[in-house]
Length: 135
Image (tube, rainbow, N blue to C red):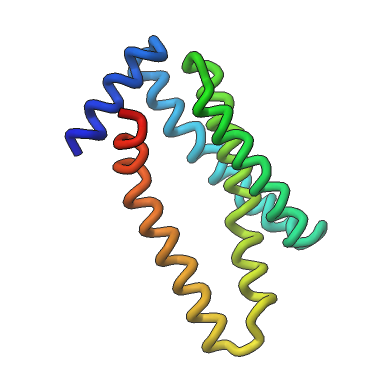
């Protein structure tokens, strides 16, 4: 946890921002993700899960690169908001793709369990790995 605190302080100094900017960087992603989750799930049903998923994946990669190259908190916050949009495109369509890929209920349940487990591990290890990589 000390790595996360050190990295956050260093991050704050490099981009020259206060605590409120740090809150927006974290909260902005969560806000756009949560607000758009139902809409993008419906969009995936209408347009197609595969094309929606691929659009979200491309947008997420591009916004991740942009976040890494951001020179101030304003740009970082904007790119994190767009990352939340991309995540909202990815999550419901990935579950829809898993549902469409497995006809057997037992196999489908295993696949969704693996999907959820990997998501949980990513959520738990993301802050630590991110702090390690940035410091």
